[in-house]
Length: 556
Image 1: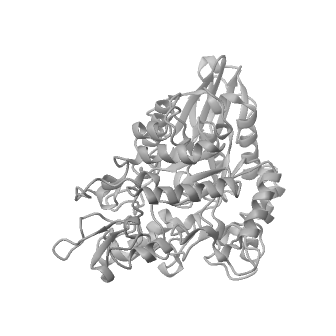
Image 2 (image 1 turned 180 degrees about the vertical axis):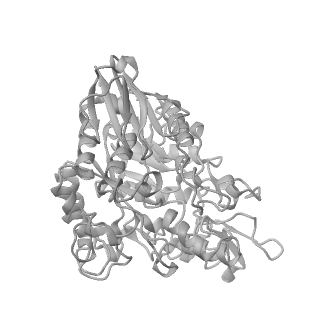
Image 3 (image 1 turned 45 degrees about the horizontal axis):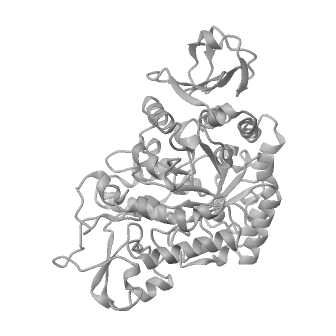
């Protein structure tokens, strides 16, 4: 397999609003990020991915952009950005920017012009349609609840918004839209020196011709069936690659809602000239129910193993995987996939990290994951900031489908704000995140769980993650080895092998707190332990795999 720096890299995602506040206004900012670059260098990550920092009215926390070539005032200035990227590059790290081009803010100058009248030159930058019998043009639903159409009095027409009504969808059928987007991307690469793009909901940019009604299935309610992987999406991405991406040595990853493995081979295929990799959602959709993610269902291990393994084996040699368990849109991985109780939090976080980082693909660490940060004990909806959670709370509880008490329980389990509480730097007030009032509440467990304590403890999750990241840099089999699942039906253990030429690796992870007996395969008898989250000198014959234990064996 052809080597590439982005295959060998480990990415750290920063949610700027919640990472570090430098000026006491309670909101994280670019100078705050710059002040913590040495921490990220010590962790050993290669790439920093920033959630959006562009000028925005913040209806959806920066994913509604009003100026692609300006910095959100709360985050600082373009001079602050230049200083930050210089600091990143000086430390041998790279910067990937979050790119949101399925939609803009309704305050973007293009949309301000577009809604003025039907003849405006920017009218066709967005998707406008006549209503049908006084109703929306079709039955598409917004990902954020309700209709995907907003009536606009000025021209007596509706515009499409797959997300908030303040996030109108761009019309990618219009070549001028594409020209403007590509020009902006070239500016960030050539003028600002960034090293790649993470592309928000990029699988939605091509809509079905004629915008027909979708089937009324749970998936269709949230747009996947109607809008994902549209007929021209690969044509548009090939054009983007030709006009922008191929001109620079970039890392590109597309957030691809509704993507299948077969589609992923097109988005991220080695010979497709589109993107380096995609984020799929199959493994983080396993604990959903009839009301989407709003349930207390746990991720079933057997199904989880099947999904992860299918992506590992089907893409091997054809396309590249991105490996993640958490991000700014997901709850804390430790609370969701593992055990965040004080007794098992540390060992379980190490196990989850091992299971993910030993797979083929580029691993993503979400801020605080390396500390074992946990979900937030939100007591009331008034403490929640996320539009998605707030809308669902009112819609589902007021319709009598879920009680308010149960909705709060589900928000504590699945809400996006769990990942957005401030980074826990130390045990001082507000966890060292800000000297002011934080924009969202700090998790009360910051006294025990924080970076200062983790750095001082050689057995901490942080230092274990350092080892995982260092191993990937010096062990090609971890990056490029072939994957094979063992024990597919075991309900407690996740066991798989990696192989590259003469080398072979065995990964054993116990996803439960109950010890489990396991017979080490004969070919690994006497193999050395590459990494483990317990004090274990050897693993041969029949062993007892302890609570949340992870063992990686290497046979030369």
